Length: 637
Picture (tube, helix red, strand yellow):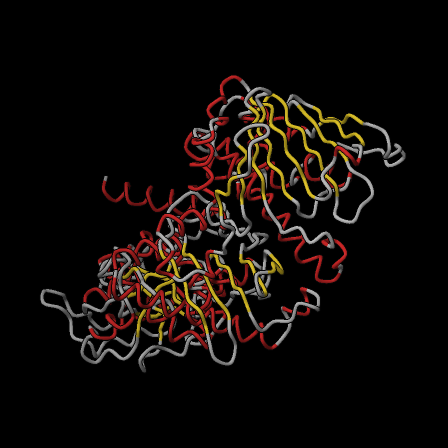
């Protein structure tokens, strides 16, 4: 939709919704959502937000609330007119606010919502997505044939009426001040024939108490025209109440309103900090992973209050690696008479941020010890994000190491701790061995692991993108350094083989000569060709040099242009493999030199394929493979 800036603002104007909005409204009207009652929570939440915004603006402009009327939300039922009205005395909207807020929604959010809806089972997923995109107002069209919004911006001398039947267009017209709210917004729903249940006072009150009982603005209900108001929501901030006075259901509903999700919180944290700084915190660990958890543009939903005044809905109260946590912080110490930006740059705010972060990590540690099965689900959803802290937050690395869980060659379920790993070190094992990549199952089949398995040495399989970074910067754990199994010498000869494993043999002179020929043939493709003490079944593998990044980290750095040129790998070849011995014998006899040259390249390409890379010259690879097969068939024949 494009607005004509030259159109007089004193005239009524009808405009079309944007295409994506029209699609969304079509889905709304045709009952995509299984729980239509969601519109009540969304409209109450919008009204509460409007009151909180005005409370903040009035700090600098007290004249905005000079009438002294306490903030409140009013829900009125008119059975005869079949209307349901949600009113607030909050900040209100201008004509421009109506056009942008109710005509375009959030441009990027709408498309993302629709894309997600198209990808999933709409009946199961759609309701849980409403709050995540700021499109809750439009749930009104599930129950209403027409929606009318009367509004007046606090301090403004103009009022406006927005109206739409949800079928493609909306109208904005001036509204006489005597018919408008003194300030704030009034949303009038003309209920359709299928929505009569929402005009029943008991039904409506039950919905409000269940879904909006924790809203920090009082809620009144008027059951019919001319009836007295009856308070059905006390407006007491849930975080300001003692924990003993809050039920699990109340915590859950507040969490849902805060997070925009409809799951159960996995962990609820509610505490009051006293001492140098006083503040109250109510935090939630979600019970499921938001689908946009790894979106770089994703915003947090962490609210900062100062003495019950909302400062910002997106406070930088937690580091990025805890972005899945949803919380409210209410401070008694932060100043109210400075900008939001200045508040978040203050020393007091920094102290609160540090205290909240430390407490969340501590509570995750307690959950891991007391309820390991419950923590396992948290780690399953958010472990890859928490591990970002191992790289970004070295000061908290020790605390995060205590809660981190890993997949390893002996524990494929992903429940292995570093403390357990160190406790089970083999005799003469001096390092924590790991292998990085992008798929744990493929890592488990890597040839580099063979020698470690033969000696019963456990190897961590690190398949998350951040793993390659934190493990390269971490000094170690419990005095044991981290060592990649794809970098440098294996250094495992001093570790005893498990029963039944064959000891690797030293390379014979014939094999050493073959390796020298391999290096001559491959030239600058490899830095070195050497005998391997880490291979037992495979013929070859690629290893990074002793110094510099391991194979996975180097791959990631190169992909992002962080290094100009990748280091030449070392080709390690199993000296006892039947293929190696056969080629060494042929080379000693001076036979089939072209065949052995082809074999050198094929061994290198096989090693590349085994670590998930591709052959660098497919036509040459195909030609060599064909020649070797022809030679083999000729010999067999």
